[in-house]
Image (tube, rainbow, N blue to C red):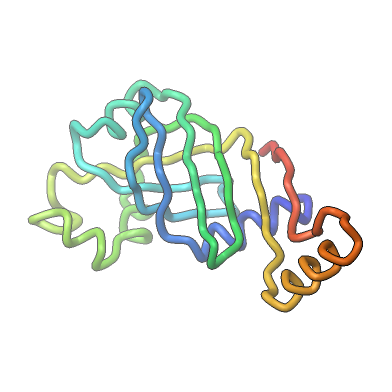
Length: 155
């Protein structure tokens, strides 16, 4: 695994939400990344647009943007329905419980799995001091500041 991929997963773990792109719309979703499985999980209800795309195993885009974590990414991959009850138990939390009347036993709960195929990723410097130094250097030299990296990752 490249350093950029590792940095992507580490920062994605610290970000809680993104926008799932489905049929020209982008829906806010909470994600649960699992680097060891090369997977990102989501919870939704039966019959939602996200669930419908997963049933059809469609390719989607998942957008992540976090100034705090310095991560900006457009992740592309296949979305599927995951029937693993142990995984549902693992990702379930109080935030998810607020959306389902009967909690994790609610018959409408669906666990979705995104298998990333590629991601266009921008990773910003993780230090405010380093950012300020780069901006100052750029102002003095006229060069473009080095405030992070941009890569296309494949998984």
